[in-house]
Length: 466
Image (cartoon, rainbow, N blue to C red; front, side, top):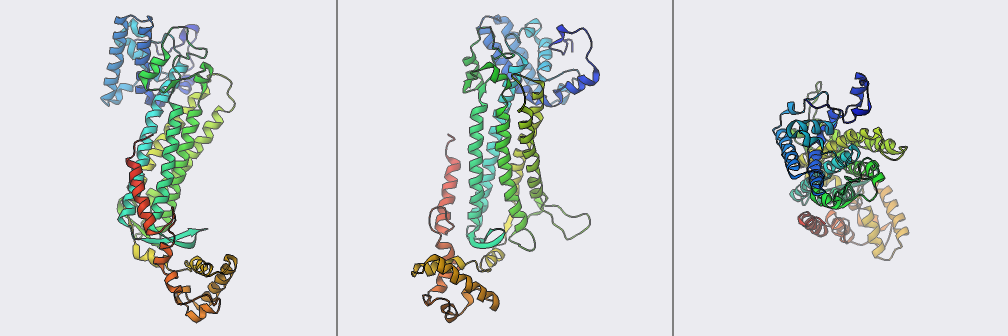
């Protein structure tokens, strides 16, 4: 390449130490910003032309050169990026542009700095990445609904403290994670709005002296507004922390879902079976079928959480404005974006490869005194204060444990020994069907409410984004 890679060499006489040059170089990872950087450069070129800084012919040569670079990169030839001397993606683009556009390419950097240039490219890249992440989250939601609807009548035990508590529909369990992902998509949308602010035109830190139309550049690049303070614009990395934070909640939810399915797939629980497509075996034990896909999702949450802390630590003591420390933001943000999107896609694949063992789950939902609360409610409906009813049912459970019988297996006279308010209709109240049907308020697990919730969930996915 004929053009020097350094964008700052005029002040210097000596050569850069090779070890420091390697340490300083970011092109190995920030070349992911190539397309975003070129898009920002195209908009900047037009703003310079409109401001009279560039002539029409110069602007045309620059546009042609930048579009040629985009075409060359789109050919997916990795050798295009083979340039060991390029310090970063910005110097790479400028050097290649000068080769194509000549002296006109040297004028493109007028009125901007790498400080506002990189902030713009990172925001452009992250805005698109947020959209891809939100789309992957929606895909996981679709998989949850598909799984729920394919097992609409399945029942499984609900747990608190990992102890059997009350029966719920399996579809109700699926909808719980649907709601978590819905909040995740909302958060991503909120982060996107704060990402979608244009820093370009802030230059190094004080703003630009050239009469560029920043609002016009913002419109050309799809930004909602321009940054109001040049000092803040070039040094703001809040949006990186916010994205990583929102992604960490996505990963926390996926990790919880993974943990549930890992437990439910054990021999001890046996509520679900994972297909061969998402499982692996043991190199020693032939009988093993390991839930590696789910374990990796659970494990990868840790790296995303770590990036949040790393980014917070990175910015906490930086004086205004730009500092080279900020180069460290990109690998963290890139890895967060890759990890959360991949994990959402793998989770959706897992959900499409889960078979619910409905009979086993229903049996488990019928045992363990999971209708004890229904017994208490039964007594309350007959006039007994809840605390007294709770006490009476607790004694019934102790009695049942001693005899090895569930509440609904005890004789009527045995039950009446704890409360004379109990009559023959108690057995209907204690049935699994009635236990589920009684949870009929909004948000409950009754079949009617769950059917409504599934329909509403489907409709919400088809609704236009706000």
